[in-house]
Image (cartoon, rainbow, N blue to C red; front, top):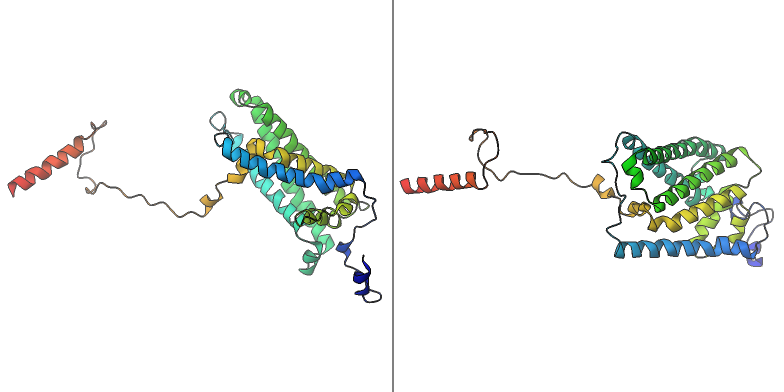
Length: 286
């Protein structure tokens, strides 16, 4: 704390709990590289890789759907994974982006927050993990799907599963091991500081080892994201949920039942010629 900031505090008062790290931690060169430099390297790779992929590999910008080969397991595993990962992302938004003081201001106590993190977080994490395990099992046991699996896909699955496992581990540790510093006072301030270009390396250095491992796996996953099939998430057809109904109108104005139903197909242009001839005969009679 600077002298100016200290002079603004009245005697007997202190800074909010979230303003300082739980414990003093020495910051070394390795910490600066991991938590002050690496996040921006990963961010540059994500942006640059996505732009490159979009410009030069739009044909490969796809999930390479294998639903044609097997759909029984897919119809269960795919929604389980996708909806689970959305819930996991929502939990990360609440835990990393929303400051602790904000949740306390709206009446969410520490106990309530940890209960939500344990219940909803575990359900979402386990559901996502179960979904990806089913997808891997399907890909391994279905011949045509396995033949279409690349080394890139296998590496992607390893990164995804590792990120999920370390995330579940940090959830359990943060709830049951009270000796671990609260991640909303360490990881969250560090994450928010990245986006204002003032990385709080000291805050992340004070975090528990499980959170550091999870953060490193997550950064690794995002670094390979643009170069795997995961890139399709950036162009998910979300607008389909809000588009208006498509109205189809028939161009054939004949009343229903005016033409007898016949088996087979009419030769191309036959009915059009018949209608044209009928109109010509009607005009001749006039």
